[in-house]
Image (tube, rainbow, N blue to C red):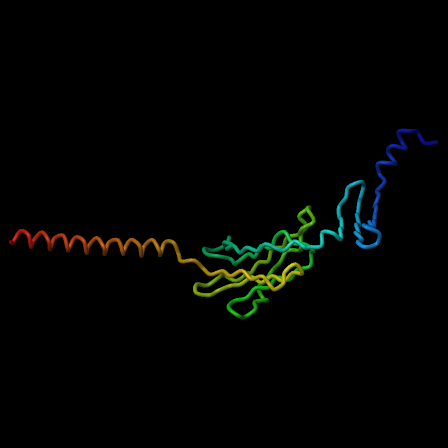
Length: 187
């Protein structure tokens, strides 16, 4: 014989998966709206609504990944965020040539709001003067989305050049001021 306490314990171990499909007929059969819901243990985890009719396009950004073992960069990271549905293709290019040998990607990860994200690492230290491109192909895009990246000027090198320019400009003003002073003194 089961007691109320043992029945309660048995009920908490029950897992329930529910799929619910609805057809809503508007104005007779002129317009039909289809809604499908997936529910697990009273928590809705997926829904399809034919009236929504659009996908989430991905947002794409590129960042430099520093090396943990040596000075400089380890590679470039292409972050592809907030897209739906999950199927997506991401490729790296150097100039016009596709780079596939040194590319590592995470699995497509759900965000929890029906959208997904993916990180794709190009494990090649970037070089100056070379353009790198992360290209994304997704059903929400009419054409592939490309983000370009070039190595920025070295800030230490840039600061040194600015200092040299300032020093030379100072010398020019000093020489012209000294020349003006000597001309005035002799006249």
